[in-house]
Length: 262
Ligand code: PTJ
Image (cartoon, rainbow, N blue to C red; front, top):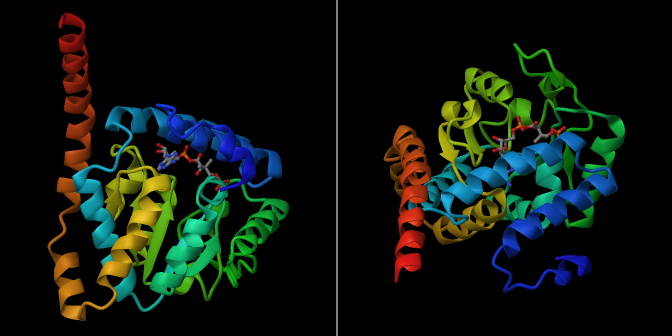
């Protein structure tokens, strides 16, 4: 946590949301996050509010399954964009270490300057090797900048973690036969809908929780990890998140009503 973040009192009821905003704002100021990243953050925040701003049991299960996939993978890669780099740089480096994954910068609004700044930012948080700068391979069927990947990075990966993604690349990666783990607060968005493992949670909570699960699971035999992966139902996870949004809001409204009446 940087020193400026101490300014937000931890007992503030919206501490996490303010912290997230602050990190994104700082990301834009440093030239890591795009201005569109501010809009994406606002969109995510609205869904997080509806989800109750906590990791639901179904998201926690998806995070455990994600950890199992990453541990089973031959070549896992964690994809990093401008929002992800601003929100969870150190947490991503830690996850990459635990599951032995590569970190690769992949941007929608790609500029050489922002690529370099993000790679440097990750190195400042302990990353040794950051991929995405060579861009010597292409994801077939994608016309925009996100098609540009490293031949020995995302192109070669068997399992890819793609947080805060747009739907196009998620679909193209799935067509390449890669197992995709998507983190997105909107269960109706196209990227979690195409993912093998959709995680409907705030990336700020999701990444440390995947790391914790990976630590718990790392000594399990392969057969146990394969069982965890095989038993997962992506459709059910998406439905649970949608239910939480619809019913959770109604339940909280009823709760407030009860409080007003008593
Ligand atoms: O850095 P770049 O150039 O690669 O651009 C990155 C952004 C995020 C700007 C770009 O990919 C974009 O415009 O994305 P979208 O289409 O706005 O989608 C972002 C998705 O992430 C939305 O569905 C949001 O609900 C979700 N989201 C936003 N913040 C969070 C989040 N999901 C999890 N955790 C968050 N903190």
